Each structure stands twice: as C-alpha cells, then as structure tokens.
Length: 69
Image 1 (cartoon, helix red, strand yellow):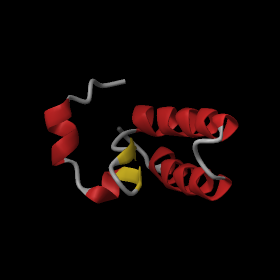
Image 2: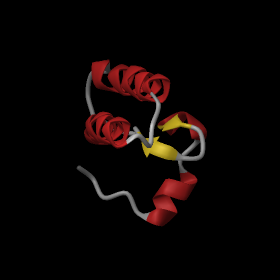
Image 3: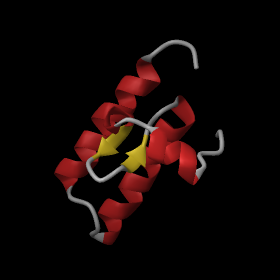
Image 4: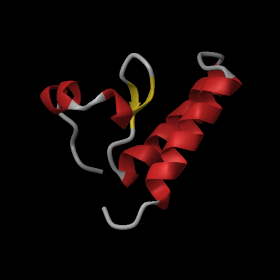
C-alpha cells in the first residue's frame, strides 16, 4: 500500500473517501481493501453501523472493480 501522508490526505477530494468526514480513504485498490477490513472491525466493535459499512463496501468495491492501478 502506498504511504498516504497527512498532507496528501488533506488534498484528496471528498469523492476519494468512503464516508463523510474524510473517513476511510479509497484512492487506490490497496486503500479500498484496507477500508473494507477496517470497516468490518469497527462494526464488530460497535463503532460503525451496518449501513455505514455497506456504504464503505459499495464504494470500495467500485474502486476494486476498476482496471489498472
């Protein structure tokens, strides 16, 4: 996974995050896979709703379905 610095994260548009508030960056396939894994963990801990997890999964799956990077 590529390193996402604080500066680079701040420059990402909202469309590169799965949830509002700049949560779960999904700018590439590695981060999309990680977002899905972290969302699952947070649901189990009770910090994320099933609807929020579904949103993360849907947006991450769209990134993973793209060809290339």
